[in-house]
Image (cartoon, rainbow, N blue to C red):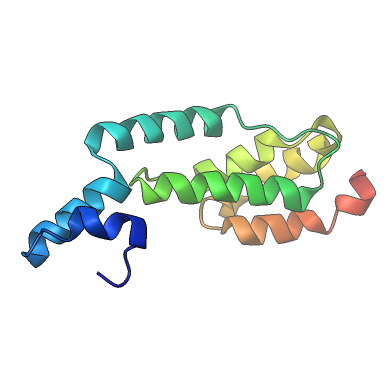
Length: 129
């Protein structure tokens, strides 16, 4: 009970069984299946509509898409590495097109981490901006 914020301890104080306490805490803070499905659908829509404005630096774009991917994974939505990498490339503004064409055709894009792709693209940022 020590890890539960004070304002919630009264609500859980009457539960004596550890399993029931854990279930109550998970339900209160984690949401139910319907809530998770709604969150997952909203995040998937945000992910699909994700784009980077020309004014945004590459690290800002990367941080935003990484946050979406992490949130989707927390809700048990699995995305392939290639799908995530392709999405990052597709979301970049038009001034990146030359580099995007080259990187979209790389053979190892399906196994390369998004961090590695970001670091490879970062090299070209001054040239692009």
